[in-house]
Image 1 (cartoon, rainbow, N blue to C red):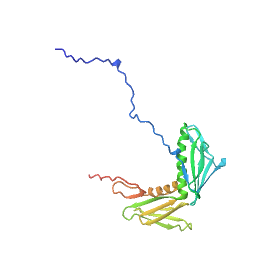
Image 2: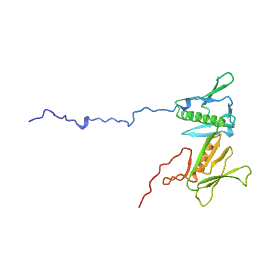
Image 3: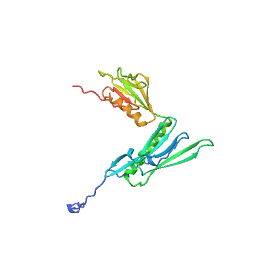
Image 4: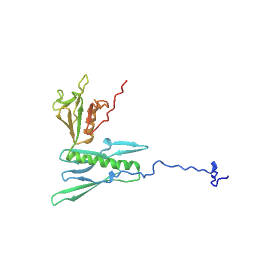
Length: 241
C-alpha cells in the first residue's frame, strides 16, 4: 500500500541560508545633550578663551582636539569652570518667571551631529554643566558608611599644616590610615560610623569618597567594609569542607 503523503525531496544545493540577528530592536541614542539647563537668577555664566600654552587636548583615533575655551559658572557657593573644544556651542536665553525673577536657559549643541566624537562630547559637556550648576547653588555630598565591629572614622587636625583636616580610619588594620582632606571639600561625622563628604565639585567629592573606600572594600561573606551612598552587596555562603 502506497501512502498518499509523499515527502518532497530537497537537495542540499537548493537550501539557502540567511543571517539573522539576535536582536531586531532599533538603536536608541541618548538625548541628554538636547535637554536644556536651567540656571537660577544668582548664577552667572561666561565663556573665556584659554591661552594656547595652557590648553589641554585629547586624541580620538587619528584626530586631536584642543580644549581652547572654558565655561565659567559663578554661584553663591563658589566658581567652577569646564573646558570645551571648538565644536561645542553654548546658547543662553533668559525668561521671566515673575515680575522680579529671571531664569536663564542654556542649550548645548555641536557643529556636526553625524560625527561620533562630537555626539559623545555633546552629552558629556551638558552633564558637566548640569552638575556644576547644582554644585555652585546646592552643593554635592556623598555618605560614607563603615560596617563592621569597631569600624569608625575620626576627624583630626593636621599637626604639620594648620587649618588642614585629616580623616583617621579605624578599620581593623595594624595601623591607622590618615587621609588629608583636599581643598574645597568639607568632611563631617554625624556618627562614629558615618562620614558626610561635601563640596561643589561632584567629581572631587565622589573621588575622595572612593579613596576612603579603597582602604576597606566591602567583602561578600560577612558584609563588612566601607560603603558609599546607596551601595549594597550580595552576601555569599561560606564553603564548608
